[in-house]
Image (tube, rainbow, N blue to C red; front, side):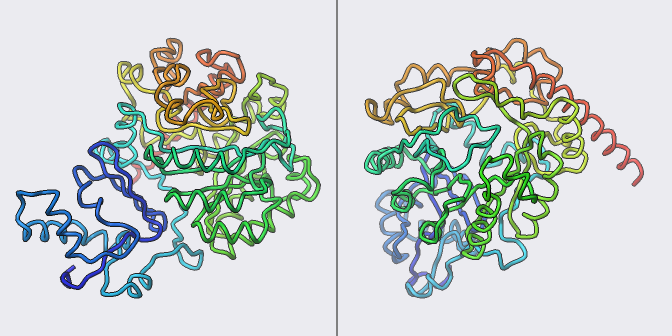
Length: 489
């Protein structure tokens, strides 16, 4: 930062800044950077996406700190931002062209495209300092709508055997309504928008919606089966720096199509994955495990690795949103679940939901801490909206409406809705059976799974209690192996 006097400064294109109370949250998508700063708001408030002269920025900061000498502000400014400039989260140079030349961009054409998850174990001190921990604590005390999922249509091109959506009506959330909601979301400090459905890419205005999200300085992700992913949609995702999550059920076209019940869907999805990769769009591949495909996930994850794409498997299948549990016939039984968990935990394979890292066994919550904690982020930092206009707590949990966008403002639903407040107030103490369970730390309490399967969000679904016990046993075996391996060194 020594070139100070003639330096231009701006945010990198894929750097996002949000202010949450005393915390400034900085998120860099390309570099997989996120950090929380205390009392840094006045510094970040004057750095925008447009190049601005360093001296002008410092003059503006000095006006905020009337008693601070300009020289001291300049030194503090340069010292504070130097490492961020080095990481290319903030760009600095002598001309706009120089800044543009420094712009980091996502590419698969490197050894580490920053799509891999950080699954390493952290010490308690490291965990306490993680940005996610600091934000979680802040949001628990000050609920903030950080992530909003928009189910912009009920229509879908597939009829997946395990899906929790009860109906696939040709219903679409109007573009104008979506834009109004995005305006409210941005004003409330929101950052992440997920577009889902149904199949979100069936919406006639999907390109305009993607543009609208990015135009409000938010991140955009599409949860899609990619069967109708066009070149126009890909171009919009490129321009919006968007990401995609897709389910691939098998490397066998016949098995994948059997899950989706759409002939030719494997070819459509695979073709779109390759086109997204060619366009340098980050893609996350999920392989949910059903009875029909649970032995196929290693090949899917190997395929994802070959493309340098992040992937994970998942065995969580829950009842439908309307309480219909007929789809659960596709769920793994306990013996199959044990086989999968042994594979995942003993081999340290990335997994959603019940995956538990044995290295964290010594960091479990006390009984008092467990009872005080929020059971999940529903209505704490996340919420969803379906194509009917109903807000609901989290993906799959549409059976408990919080409000309606045709009647209520987003702010009202988030801050004033009695249903929202009720969900938000739920803590571990509301689950006395779970609080005293020896397997509680090997499970994740899920209001949605409970409600969809039992009709009562506070009544645990027994299947997952049994899964937690299996998880506990397998983790103990992994712990024994780790101790044995350490003793041999």
